[in-house]
Length: 196
Image 1: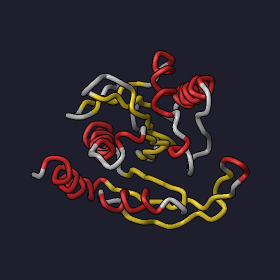
Image 2: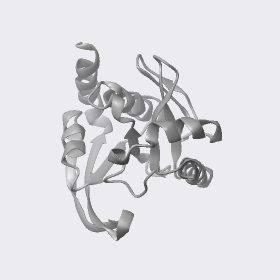
Image 3: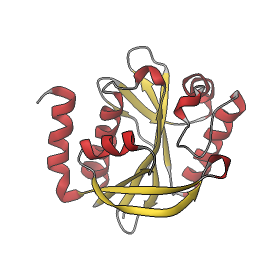
């Protein structure tokens, strides 16, 4: 059985800390860019949206199905995005890493790679997960490429899977990493991050 509890995960570039209402202003400042939300189920157009984002995340945490994080820059201490564990299945020792977004100033840097490495390492080495899944909008080819790049294995596409913003019916592309694949994925991520 997975025991998923709030935790701080720290790397060289980022610190992932449990999301809470004190992050509201930082989430608003980091998320107030329309280009972030093109494939998401919501948008952040006013400060109230940041508060609602955190409230919904904490409701998921209270139900035991989610564990949300604020992504903090170690360089300046600012919020630069958010990510979370979703669809936590304690019995089946699996979960999903998702609802990840980053402020545009850190796009095309090593920030997202380090976030995924910290989360995956925690899943496989501390929680004892046997499966971690990632999904993305079928239109988001950049996200699919990034997931494959870190070692995610394509599993399939769920058609008409979700109704997102403005009533768009999206297909979702699923990937996974299994416990037996983690050592190779870990090595690949370390190579991308540290050149090891």
